[in-house]
Image (spheres, rainbow, N blue to C red):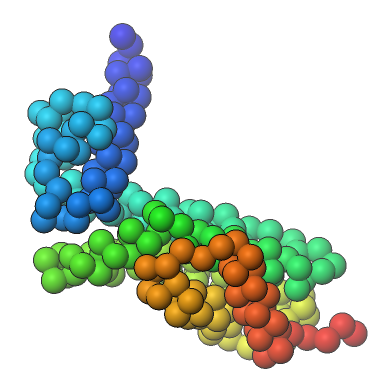
Length: 211
């Protein structure tokens, strides 16, 4: 095995451990999860878990932050079309809004939120870390899109960061209420209605009528 192949294999094994860890933590909770079950889920030996991540606390932190990075990246990708929304801005906003809602309503996102909230007393800095990777990252990226749309005259001039925060609030607030804080799964049709309503309200506040 070449050095490059060995390094790649180590990265793949570490990712498998992190994936397995998140699955087990989501299923069991932090206190009930055990390293042996994580090793079994990842398809590796228990000592291999400790070779990559030294203890359960480190394993939990890295698993949570890795999923936070993944969710943040998915959200940024969901608003990528707003760089060039075409002639139909409402349709582009609706498309991105629905994508964001589907990500936020996914099992992975719901588990990430519940695990982070449950373990905040034990890991007090973890909430900030996860928010930086998720809501902070998407707000920053969306602020950039809003600024470009305002400069182009597609939205009325305002603070783009505030516009981004309010757009996201129009999505996540109703989602939390309808899903009963993530305990009820919503159908795509219901998510689409939430997206339509959020975009309609947002454009009433920030929309610029065509010249």
